[in-house]
Image (cartoon, rainbow, N blue to C red; front, side, top):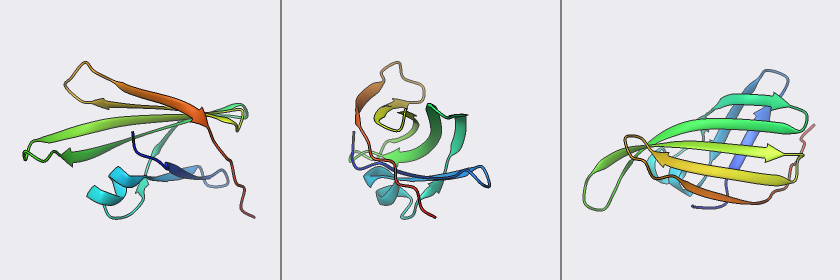
Amino acid sequence: MQSPVIIAHSESDGTAQAADPVIMHFKKNPIDVTIVADQPAKKTFSWRVKVKDPGGQYATMNYRATVLNGKQFVFSATPLGYENTYRGDGSCTVKVQR
């Protein structure tokens, strides 16, 4: 999985955008994402990106990212139509802009 993953979440209007190396390569700009869970201790976001491998085959990747207690980051990527899922976790930094 590519890092960094940046998620900008506006609690005031309930929107979020994500950017990572895959998004920036294929979409050129951050994309809108779906907020799946929005609780004080758990925030989960999901999005899809259509990608193309070096051989010219297309796939749609389904991504899911969860921030737990503002400290832990859990990430998964699943190519739609396939059974394999790529997972990773680690620490994260939450920055609040005023």
